Amino acid sequence: MAKTSQVNRNKRREKMAARDAGKRAALKAIVKDRTLPVEDRFDATLKLAQLPRNGAKTRVRLRCELTGRARGNYRKFKLCRVALRDLASAGQIPGMVKSSW
Image (cartoon, rainbow, N blue to C red):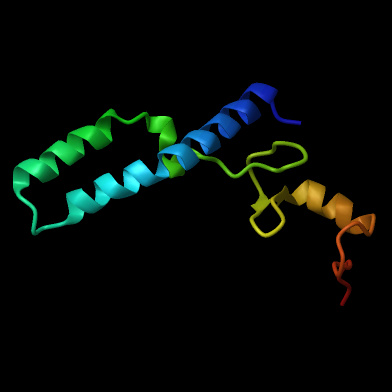
């Protein structure tokens, strides 16, 4: 089990990223628009830099929903490899069977 502080920090980042997504997208569109004057684009860059860093989507870490483990996660299931194997062995995941060849 991961530290609860790490899990809570990641959840806070997810909320901030969802909250600031619209603002960031608008400012990035202004910065990338070459038809606008340089001053406007520079002001948008400064406003973008003043937003909190934890509001960026890249700061969010994919963690296991059950254990909070940060490594070895499957995006489709939002589970780490260890939890996925345990659930699959117990028959909790529909359609997933242990492979044999």
